Image (cartoon, rainbow, N blue to C red; front, side, top):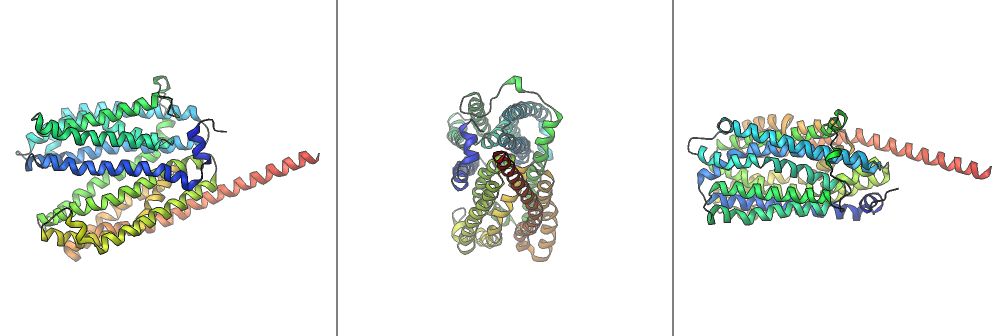
Length: 467
């Protein structure tokens, strides 16, 4: 049925091997990006306190840019996976081209709007008079580069949807490594200061964009990027946004949650704020690895759902949950029992080590359950189930987290602040189980229908042979 090697792989390769092949590049790409974020902060920190403040002020804006790119990328990836599973390559080409060009247009509009209202936006995000010059120099360049940031977020997800996980890893890694190399050169050698940091980021993002476009124009891609395929329609955008909107909400709520967490911790002093930052950075490594597993799972689930290969879909769910749960349990052991040693990699301040080690123990409690939650949320995206995906997006960082941080901090002080995210994750896990039971019934129903159709075809064939 499938003529292309990559689609045949999604349809026929044994699920354990397929998931490994799809997940490892995603994990590597995300970990390289995580390392880049740490190194970039180190270089900017050498410029001065105001420079770090400028990057902090710009971060919410960067989160918005990323959220838009991810909304189109994850929404399009879900749709494309299902279309390829249905062997509808023509529509998959239309969706990918429409998504790429639309994101690029939005990036241009966003850049123009952002530059025009740059100072009011920075003031809204909290820029002081001392930080404002640095923030303007840094953020203006970042806003111009938002065209490439959105495009990268979009195309990397679509590339994985067609089974080209290695290409996504190469594009992500190349951009991150190029950024690390250019940072000290532009900041210090060329004396560009903080503008050098943002210029390095934009150049790196532009190179990644060119690589991904080049991939789509080559014979290596299942899909083909052609301007004549840009045929926007309400039906295409509706299908993309069905999954894209929950992603957008989740990203924006994450930004709000981080801001709220920092503000609540600030009441207890700079050591508490530093501890929150270290815990989030440590926790992010584990989160990124689990997310890498599920990014490899998403195209496998979407494709086989579209192809109505329900047994392969069920196997992919079970194996991904098993692998992410084992990893989460192992990470729990490290973070819970060796928390001080882990925190010591990031700080030598005894007060910070004490506070952060205590907080990390609370975060560790939820790790064995995290893999299940992320896998099932990814499953909803892969199957095109926008409503449960939206419910989970609103719940984890919204309905559950915001009340939890106010309630727990009031009753348990600083410890309550550390309890808030694990508490929200625990409640989200319970909700995820309930939603999964509902959706799994649909999967079982499809399996029964497929079995009935198979039996009917066999009976019809036997009757014809008898005749």
